[in-house]
Amino acid sequence: MLLQMYMPPRVVPSGLLLIMLLAPLGASCRTGGAGTAGSPGIIVQPGAPGQSTRTVSAEQAADLSRVQPTAADVTFMQGMIGHHQQAIEMVELLTTRTASEGMRKLGERISVSQADEIGMMRTWLRAHGQAVPDEHAMHVHGATLMPGMLTEEEMDRLAVAKGARFDRLFLEGMIKHHGGALTMVKDLLATPGAAQDSEIFGFIADVDADQRMEIDRMSDMLRELPK
Image (cartoon, rainbow, N blue to C red; front, side, top):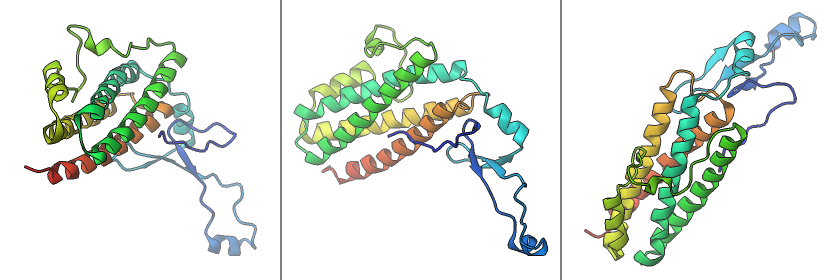
């Protein structure tokens, strides 16, 4: 589920959270209770996942409010659609290849979240006049695989496995897959000017948090499998 942030009626800079701090009580007392109603608030820009926040001036905040998506943002969204689609195809194999109810529940959570995010990414691309890749584009001969995606050979091995062997291959493959999504987020954040659009910033923050949480869960499940 994507992060929803409350936006006040006036313009709020992209990716910023306005925090209004009241004047110290002592100052209010010294001015006879008048306070400092006209004093400006402090504008804080949240950092990217794993990074600290920073205070920005009103002028900087106004500049950030006009930030537009970059080519790197568009490429990220287009590539992540195919990345998510492969995860859904992996989950579809669970219906016939596993005997574990826990694995099926894991797959259901992954499928729902990935499908929801694919819908969001397609909508974002259309809204910005960008090409929306076909969901099967990654199967075209010579297509470039995004970080962490399974090769055709790896998908074939997964498709013919069954029972505990399937579960192990699935968990190992999906951990690798999720790790690739984290790499894509990291690479985007390292690109100058990218990830400043509010929707992009909120999306990658959710992807980073969700994928890390699921990697931890799958790692635990992997350790619990019989050797």
